[in-house]
Image (cartoon, rainbow, N blue to C red):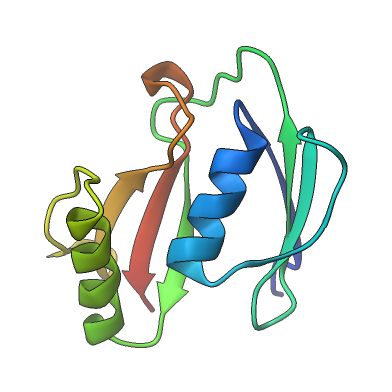
Length: 118
């Protein structure tokens, strides 16, 4: 079974959308103001972003973006660092991975992204 749709409530839809487009190749296929965006990846996975107030995910909540190679993980990591994000270098942990906090999300509501080779 494959997951085909995920809805995330975020504090800043525009910042989250731009982050996902820039670093993860997601494509926005529709928006309604600043409160909703629908995004697709190359496999037609649907990710919707909805504006919420005081969004509180559990501390360990994150979503993973599988990559085809270690080189691709390294490229994304380097690009994020070059663009000023605080990210550790990738490590071996349930795959070759690192975590980054999406912009516009406060630490208590951090939407962490797990970039991993599967």
